[in-house]
Image (cartoon, rainbow, N blue to C red; front, side, top):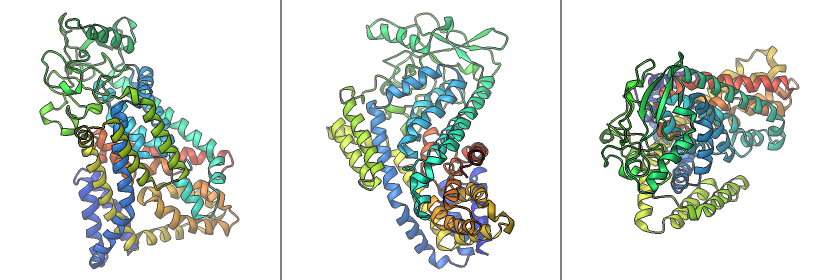
Length: 551
């Protein structure tokens, strides 16, 4: 009975959010409460929820202060050099942009924290996707899948859990898996390339007239602006058609003045700059937003205009976090307005403190890896120190906290709502019954192949339950069944890691709400797009592990 209710509860939750019948927070709270009553344990609902909240409270605290810390680091310009390098590679090519998203997500994932990876990746890439009219679910899907593969690092969590549960050395579990994980990451890059080609075909490649690089166009625009010259004539981005003819598109916005987040919506006749070296002058007019639509006429000489995409909301209707009070990632889409990304002239930059901030971040990540203090405590101390040193005045500190309050509230709310789901799933015994049923359903003849069975089961089980539930509840049972047929616990532990690419898009992973929230993507849309590709990536890792004799 509990097995059926458990699967029914998960299926109901996924169907409702993918069909957009309920918001994730409402579904995470109301559906488990209803199924708890169906299980005849409604009287214990309060205890289950409090227990779930207690277990996830440290995660919520970690995410809250991690968002503040890395939000401040983005504001002060710590990641600008990395972002500029990636964006120079991306240029105006949708294929390069998607590949750049995968590369950036993989690099930043080295810190072992998903929320950090998603904050930096979205902050860097979101302006490009918006400006070129690219699909945002491609960005979230590629970022989540790349991070899922990298999540198997020993300090990422799953490897340490598997080693602890089976009393093994984490190095013995992880190091032999490196070739298989490298194959999975390579597959993510290939997938990004293919998805990028599809986006390129859908939108048509963009290029600047005369073959100039975007960085050159930015320099051309910034130089006269800095010198106090008059109105700047922006270079126009051109949509290259298959026949070789080019339709003109909307011109890029002016730099500096109206391009900054602080003056969004206040200046007439000018619009936001790209804000980064790689995005200058890259816009499509509303008239060319749909493939095949004739381009809009060029802006008259001596003026600087930018046309927002046709589906862009007016600035007055945008969420507060998207307006001028969020300088690191300001959304200034509106009538005659461009999209403002990481503005190189934002008032929050602290170039003189760059090495202090870099050293603080390295020290923080080192302390996390060495486990000198609990991660929530480290981020709490780091956020307080970063705010105090970079913004010594109290009003400035309040402004920075307020600028990131939306993300903090959304993520913390999701975590505590997920605590209801996990609390009911665990407290009622549904998780145990589901795991026992799955293990019992394994045919006797599959005993010698328990490593393969473990790898296959890791996909659905790590998606439908937390890593703690899988590694401490299910994995020991699978390892015991494998040992009875001569399968090494090391092989079982390695096989258990292959589902992490899919796990990172699970509704029970708090970091995924940071990703979809900052990217302004519906969780259901993200799930529909990502699950198939993430599952395929996991199968590639499993196949490579078997091919190399690791599993």
